[in-house]
Length: 500
Image (cartoon, rainbow, N blue to C red; front, top):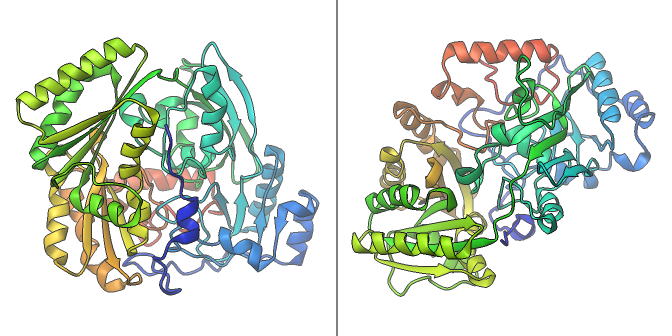
């Protein structure tokens, strides 16, 4: 299955109409004066650990590391270190911890919440040189790779052997597995294979003081004490830097079908989802939705055709993946007959060959790129109960009227809404932020949702974390952080609130 990466978007996006950087309605955190400022002695020490090509000090070389791909977040680091081994990571962190030099770990830098870029002058520790696939067991399907390995590289490695990665993202050509694990990235395959909390069998990580923690198990079952690897899945590099990952990979499906359906209202979308889960069962691998404004944006900015003759308010992209083409086709045809008989869709089309499958997926996966070509985009990644899932889009649309374009899309199969608000041909604006936040988070909290479904917390959401986590939970998280990183050198200002 072909996926569009973010590389073209990074080069050509026109959303950045000036150099203003907004972090949220909250002010950018002040620099913690207890952190040391790097000097020539520090750089000389790092030269004793790394070769000269692995140390970047030229501002022109560092610029791309200092900002996220949306150019919404931007730091002022003067140094990028690119270790090639876990031992080098260990030596770097031990030195930084002793000197109290702040460090931000960085993978492919494809995140949405500013978690992988410095806030101020933290050293950037790039894992991109640690990009080897170390081992694969074709019997168990377990792969072991270094943290800097690009997700698509792993997929390309596994595919000829009949296996696939249990994770699929639009940024798969750029994102790295260490970053995926550190952010607990979701994506379209979560419905079928579950989250990385279940698929990651082990990690190797380096703690703030340089201690190398070997939890790189390749066992499916290991019930010996605390499952320490889970601390590093989704903690965004604040508890340790993941250097290696072992992961279970499923057999690659040989029979893939994709359907695109049009619905009159969101109630139909919900009912079709329910029918798909009960009738397609084990072969249902993706269930995505897009509203009409999403389709209009893609048609405007991409070379694609309107999928159907008549416009509809909602669209479903459904994928089945299995290993018996006859069996899968029978189940899919029976499902289609059922939803058509109940008038749950008003139009539809199936794709069974790679060209048409890619065309259908392009409609869904080009939304982010198309939004970026419009202007500033305010992105919110929410988990919500299905009954309240789309209501927030309608509320925000009424709130903004003609001041912004509000669209909704996402992984409705696992309750994950991507609420995007764009202001065509305008830069980021505090006025717009103030209209969104904290209203969006309050709404999500009132309906027992999550303010971050899969993008993480990063720099964007620490001060809103209380909308999803209790005070007791936050206090325990802070206690874990203080125990594992007492000097707070790892990815400071991120994830946990600093002002409460």
